[in-house]
Amino acid sequence: MRNLRQTCCRAALIVGLSVFAAHAQAQPAGVLRVAVGADPATFDPAFNDLPVGNAVDLAVLEGLFRLDPQNNVLKSLASDYSFSPDGKVFTVKIKVGKTFSNGDPLNAEAVAASFNRLLDEKVGSIYRGLYASLGTVKAVGEDTVEFHLAEPNGHILMLLASTAASIVNVRAVKEMGAEYGRKPVGSGPYKVDRFVGGEGFRLVPNPTYKGEYPATLKSIDFIVVPEDGSRMALLETGAADIVERVPPESMAAINALKDAKVVTPPSMFSINMEMVLKGPLADAKVRKALNLAVDREGIAKGVLGGLGTPSIGMVGPGTQDELRKTFPPIPFDPAGAKKLLAEAGYKPGQLSLSFTCPTGRYIKDVQVCQALAGSLENVGIKATPLVVDRGTWSKVIGMEPAARTDNMGMVGRATAGMDYTLYRLFFTGVGANRTGYSNPRVDALLKEGRAATDPAKQKAIYGEVQEIIWNDQPFLFLWYQTQAIGLSNRVQGFAVQPNETLVFDKVTLK
Image (tube, rainbow, N blue to C red; front, side, top):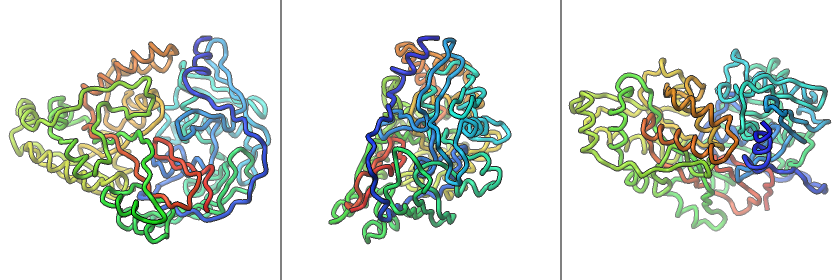
């Protein structure tokens, strides 16, 4: 197991040393106004599934590790870490003297309690299955946490660097109940001062924060504006400094502004229709027919205005490129789709499918869903797009497959790390696997890949997994979304992770 320890530490990830020169910090100043398209249901990292929620969790909470804007892993609360010789125990030393914003100590006991809550089946975290390999978490004294692993895991640093693994104040969770999801008690540089569902929320500096990323702003005010035109108008009039998801038809107008521009940072969002694998979609011929029915290039250009690149694999670019495998593009072949549907026993007009789509979650999501309906109608399928608000959409796509009444849901996935991405979506029974996908060979490979430490072996294992999934087609594969963010010229130091998490660590206003 020595290789597991060594590889994880030197080759699996680039780990920041968290060595910063001490220097005086300026007082927080200025109000940053951010217009977002989706209203977050919760900031509780055990249940949050939105990039805007990730941005808040990154600012309000802390983890043992964190990702930088290039998806490199940095130490955060952790000061050191090591594996036991047999690889069964992962030990993390944490920084001493930390507190939550309410004054409670953030010690080893608090860290262990946070992880054990995440792993508690009764809590029902949507990430529990993904983190199950952490096993049992124990506090040793004030500054040491031991993860007694349920299985070898050569990807543990990436798991612990996700905002899903942020440290929550379990005592505050018990006292506050659902309110914790709106105003989480954390140890980060900011805290949530106000949350009004459907309208917005405000972050203000956490006066008890001690760390490398002190608050630079007097407040960060988020405004929830699902409608694209209204969101752009806020930037055009100076009422917002940052706006999410600039639609293609607005890019020229934003770039023509004297005091703002559109930035297109790298994105690894893979946008797909995730199928519910029961009824007609249990048939591989039907799934393949759907994939042949869609003109990805045409929709990417005509609807997305070029803000999308047709998929050549489920895993998006930047996930972990050294392990990523790509394939020839799926052709646009309506005749082939009709042939497969006939072979599956469906005459034109006999197959009816519905799919759930959000409003304001992805670039041109409503228009995309309407275009997809037209594509399916073109091959003889009665297609019904169910366009709903973000909250309803989140509930629907989060349901167990057996309880779903629709056939597909539009979902974007952008998680760093191959194990993190594939295990959570395709391992049998894991919480984020909402298609009902189950393949014994894939399960075996994912277990093997999780334990593997040799890069060549990992590449072979995950390459086979990606090939099986591409051929099984449990998704209607679409495209990789391009980020387009409207940014005022007065904003300095702004960064975005490839999973579209906004990073405010170094933001100042001029």
